[in-house]
Length: 327
Image (cartoon, helix red, strand yellow):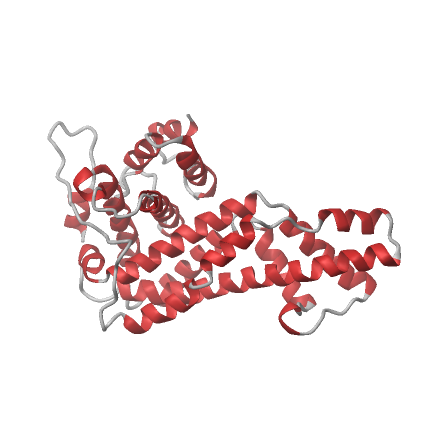
């Protein structure tokens, strides 16, 4: 693995042309092998809800007007009207929260497949592309969800009103899918209080995977897999012969998101992070590539690197990388 990563690493001070490892990850048509099928199907069942959740979150308007009226003019009619609007919204927030628990459940299944055994990271990526694609879909979902969430303060406002109403007025939730107990509402509140709740769920799942499997799967297996996948994403985007194999235009943006998501996850999992000089992750190359994209594509991803990574502002991060991201 070490030799592979040194092969992939880019050294800007080297006068020689660096070797490149060209591997095409099929994020569009990856099909599971028989050995992957059980895990693939379980993850597929979870991801079936992902697009719907993102669509609902993107269109989320909240109950701001009804809540303001219920607070400023707390008549029975105004309070009842707010409650009627808030209840289905809280049920929706419950569904989002439960999806984060599903993500935490299936991510370790994927990591176990991609990081265990004697195969190198590249061998895993080459031979298990269906699971790699699902991991990429999860990373893209996480970045999209958190981007939308940060633009939607109504999520927390609606949940806060619900909790206050239950506590102060003694309301009972309705039965069925919309039922949210006080205990569950409190857990949801902690989830939505995070600036990037889905990223937090993803990093927790990965950290737990590493801790729980430390005796059979060294942490290096996980971090090297993340680093290698990030490097391969960068190579695919930099190499016209590889990028030209994308069948859909939106795949390029998916690969950009996945590359950034891998850097962020690596930075949270590796003890020294992604930005130190010894890191196998080519952060400079990734940032330079992002800056070549249209701002509508690049700015959300650059902001994700600026504000959701763990080690960027530490002393060990080279000034060149800090300056690249500060510009």
